[in-house]
Length: 149
Image (tube, rainbow, N blue to C red):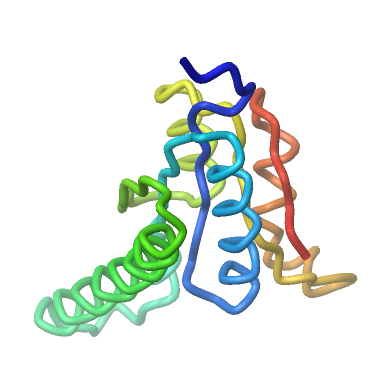
């Protein structure tokens, strides 16, 4: 029987270097807690659609969507491989939508005990203009969130 407070841990990953730093923390916590780890990647198609000129054709859009799905698979594969090396069960999950909203919703719907994520460390005007997924998750999640710098 697992008496740990963390039975289900979610690692939000975009495949970036900061997300990879969070992988180590998530794997370590999952291993010491004997918890299942969900490697969650969110494809933010809306961000790409809103910045595209109206003249972009459907073939280009399909190619972009496929590219984003491949990036998501690579990000979750990285976590799966790290989990396998540490003997931690990892379930890859790829979602589509607003990253912060999808992360918070997934955590609530799947009874996640801990959300682990990296941060890009944006400050000032850059953070004001594009926002921070980590900050939005911390603000809106009812679950415990660990942000790894």
